[in-house]
Image 1 (cartoon, helix red, strand yellow):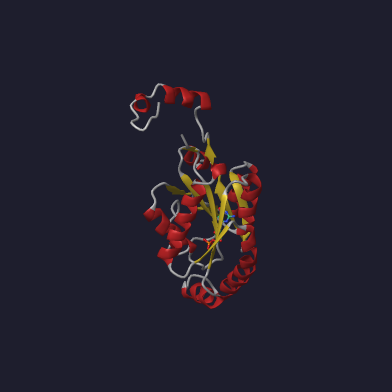
Image 2 (image 1 turned 90 degrees about the horizontal axis):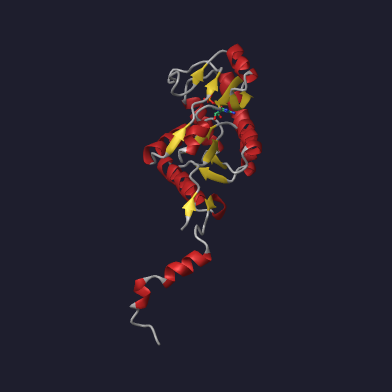
Length: 224
Ligand code: 5GP
């Protein structure tokens, strides 16, 4: 009688760099196999722990700009002097299979998605504190001091944009934060505006079914 829309949810997750969103998302993928994480394209240099085609699709700035011209991206942004973008292809394919699609993107891209697809779900992950954020950015040991300072400044500014999202989750414990986001997704699936055909049959059809129902004829409580 109640049918959820076949289409999966588009879930946009943003967080300041160093808030731990990558780890939380990996935990969510472990716990829920109906999620599909989109792999972005970027022109930033590879880090030691990057794997081309897994963490990102890496390309040059020029190649990225060619792809912008070819309308290859659903959204893209210039962030800390590097391009990042979500390839359009595959997203619709996964959504129409009923899979929930995660975009792990920064705020400029998230706001482009909000304009294009307002019914998407927007979740912001906060670090437990600014001190913790600083520790994580430094502890990563992958960037120069200038890069860390630049990222810290951007992260600080980004935290003010939390109000543009639907939900905020503080990452003080990875497992708990992942469960919170999975609960948000479950709750969103139950929203009335995400359900189609609440009553598949008309009232007359139901009344007819009731009239021909033999169980009703044998109802011992029936008073003549
Ligand atoms: P990082 O260089 O640390 O991997 O990522 C830097 C920022 O770019 C992060 O906030 C990350 O979420 C964001 N990002 C990654 N992929 C995309 C994308 O496809 N589009 C946009 N707009 N941002 C992205």
